[in-house]
Length: 97
Image (cartoon, rainbow, N blue to C red):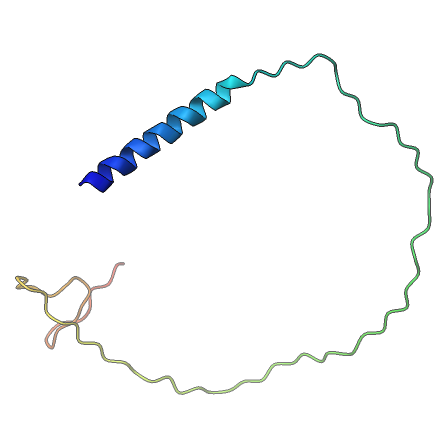
């Protein structure tokens, strides 16, 4: 308990110190700033000779056997009814139409 109180006091001291340090400095702008003047002349982009490989893209139809998965959820404690959307041996799953 003593360490917790010490930590809380330390955090409060840091926050108060940061508050005073924030308002300790006062900055007033005495002169407007100005961007430097820059002179730019047109140039030329470098030339490049790029050779790429060929990519052939096609499609192919295949048949994939998808396994069926049976899931039996564990019964919830204190629940007499199965969860919504879960089929039991005698029921079909609920659907939202």
